[in-house]
Image (cartoon, rainbow, N blue to C red; front, side, top):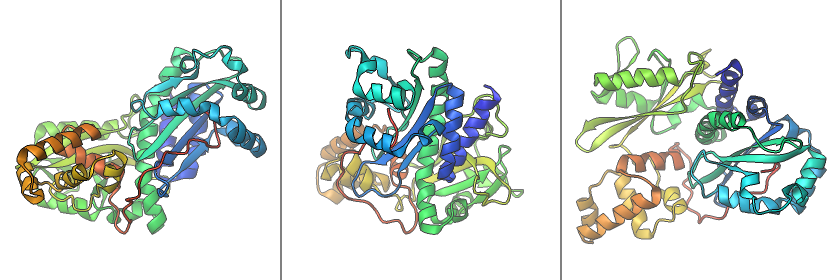
Length: 402
């Protein structure tokens, strides 16, 4: 990968902490793909979901007259609704080529919305990517191409796919950062308000910062700890090797070839309990950590201490029944099938059926994955009210275009 790729990835992760930086990041995304424009959209799926909205475009879209965009949204955006509906049903980091999706439309360029964009913006064909498939929100990255280009090249598509895992991870991380900023006017400086373990770690394993829950986990369990000289250490040597590899691969400063968006480890603690470890790139674009701008974020979830993780939004967005919602809560709390059966006063076979149904609906294969999904869907932050309102379809019209 070239230096433009490295610069683009760094900008994407900077924007996860400081939202206005998405403008510069999307300019770089457009340049790296060699498209004419690029748009990022994120919207909640509930009418009551005011947690976060993202709506940014590259320079091309920032220069479009407000009246022109308003005309498009009011009179022409409905043409894109079938494509957005399709996009909301495909797997994460999959893409739609507009000329393939609309293959049955004769003379696509003559369709009113295309004519308008060709005339006003100078773009025609588009590629849209679904970033995350978490049902709590809808997000997409879209690249638009010059009106004289008939279709995207294979290299352009490859470049888009090289960026999308990082855009997806940045958006996911931004949800928690946005909650911290809104509530506590800080991000990394307010890590203690997050009720699962968080550490800022250099590529060599040196711990730069950690929150209260991470300190508890590191001191209470033998499978993961902090050495006397401040390094993150895993008791199992094979896991330690994976940790070191993940830290290096997730550091934008040290990794010039292929940066990973996420690495995961599952450390057995005792009995059925474990520590979930997730490693992601981190850039302190707000400079809250005294010059430590380029490290990794290590997330630790103690599956024995999950009372802080709400399952309300997960149950709502994945359309769990009342029984499945209750079972889901008990699973996240670490209760066995037999204990859940006794609590709910139903047979063990009924509970097994409801557990299987819960895993199927949420696309999880075990309790650890369910806990991880719940923590992503509702970041466990002190003082944030749980959202339990019924879902509403996402509004997909925005100041951009598919």
